[in-house]
View 1 (cartoon, rainbow, N blue to C red):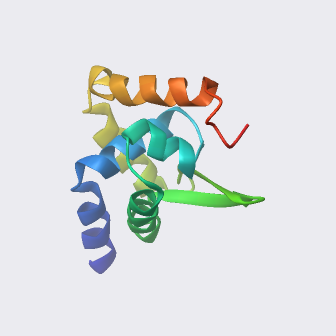
View 2 (spheres, helix red, strand yellow; view 1 turned 135 degrees about the horizontal axis):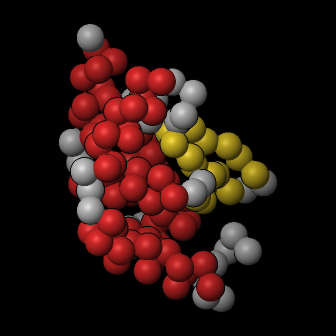
Length: 112
């Protein structure tokens, strides 16, 4: 029961739901997540730690960068995320996606 509480607490935050919605589209570097949400790296790390502890995301290191993706190995997590993220209108995620695309194409993007 404790793990279920951790999962639902992780889902009970709008910033973390926005992050999950972005990760639904593709794997992202932490700097991309910060740029898309307009938050600084320590805030990104804080949210990612909670999402990882809940088992909702996985991460991999590539040099000095950390990339995150949705955890699709656990069937319960996969269906829970699919159900929850389906309820978030794509129009609500549009500003984050636009900031992400602008950052990806900018000179400020360190992950190029």
